[in-house]
Length: 131
Image 1: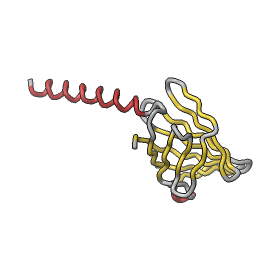
Image 2: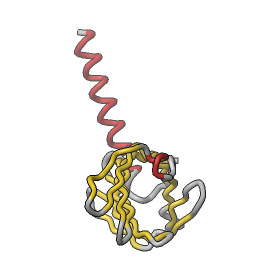
Image 3: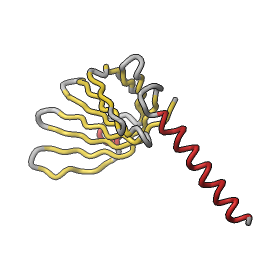
Image 4: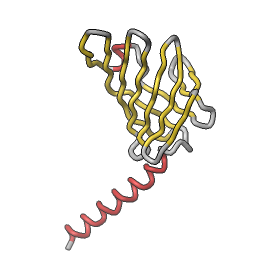
């Protein structure tokens, strides 16, 4: 009896945690995002995998949907375009001659950030949480 009660409690807590966290990634709350993995791609060369700090990318980014900005340790850049569907939020902008697109999963807060210009592409993966 103890095992099944414990299992039910675990399942219940998992469902409650999922429902609470899913609402956190709908663009209504500021988020803190950590970059975890980076890929650098150049024309004619296979992409290479590294850590974000190896390519000069910030470890943390703050997404402020109310102010429509992304704040890093050095710069603040405006969100020029924000589109949302039930599964994700797509944010676009430009900075230092690069265009960028950040896609935030509305369910679990995972993110993918692409930073591109006419010669280079950087893809970063990470996770976000509420601040």
